[in-house]
Length: 543
Image (cartoon, rainbow, N blue to C red; front, side, top):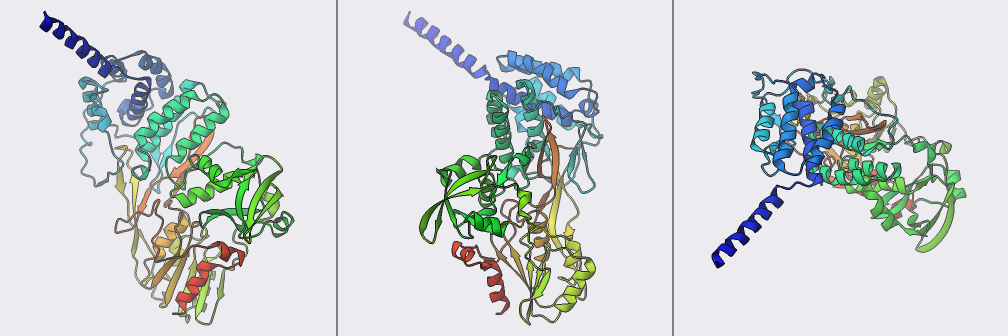
């Protein structure tokens, strides 16, 4: 009798255990839908032809997915969907022997036995092996190598969409990143985790402001200094007449946008901002960072300060530290155009610092002829300082022939392969120009956190010179071209479009370019109006 009772108890608990194992949460169901929706969009040959209104297909299948409670019934919903899309022919071109960059590639989820039946997993594997090899209706490539998203409705009137369209927007974006973002493997947060986390958040938002905050958080997970999203609301903000930067881990006035307005509002270079409107800067920064995308913490911090120190009001209250004393000031805010600010306006194109040292500011506007004349003038110098602490005006090829007597490879480039989404193929290596008239002295290259994108790419090209020293601090860490896509609701967002690395495989994304001598500006240096990076360059040039 006891054995019979024990057996019944064991059967009861085993049944409950198995039932609990097979039950699927709503988040798991939606995660699976998001992945399968994107996989079919970019892999299934019939979907790739544009034969289906893929947005409507999502809206139709969503309630069916949410209705099911276990993996077998959920898998059957997906099987029926796949079979309704039409027959897939065997692909003779799909067994490619291409050399891939595969750090982003992962379709292991299609074989997840805890979520999918064996039949569904087999169908997904078959689609991968016989994937679309023709032009895809939803994505193409541009001559430079990055993707271009096409034929996507933007729903510009949906600033705060209904839940099903909020999920649709999330799944569209998530899959674009999943298959075509070159640096997905470098993100702090696993991209699969981001999907499940954002599903819950995007479903629970109550209004447009909450929705836009979640979208900012989504984009921030790319950890990419190229990444941002625009809500077409920038014109409503007003700004301080100064720039606030992260210096010695504090919020410090690092640049004056307008001298007279800064003086009127009692703001000086080197002022440490302790509070804003009676709120501690540390807490404001902590609350803002998760909504800001950047490749490294310093870039994210500076970008966060740009958000913190703006408002729709006409003024803000600041608590500052100056010369060891705390002061409270009320400062006006202005439309940025009112400052008459031109970035790098104080920097000359070039100058002779001494008889033996020349200086060239790459942010200035040159014609190729002017640049040639500058190098002819500097040909007898011992050293030339090249300032890349801003965005260069001319392409690197115009300059690098003055650095090398022979062409040199300075970067490896890899592009998304839309014939095998998630995989990337190596493109032609990036090479410098060269000339027999190349400068024979010492180059000193200046970089900092303002060196972004083309600045970093150009720095990598310059670093091929035989006698060059790079000094400064960590650059923005976003190399290569950025691309724009429309996020559902009429919003524009961007991210890095193809991968760049040094020829030896060293990554420049997130880390920034290689630096030989680390120099970071100090608060005292800002107060004294010194350019500490340039000072170090002159010191090295004189050795």
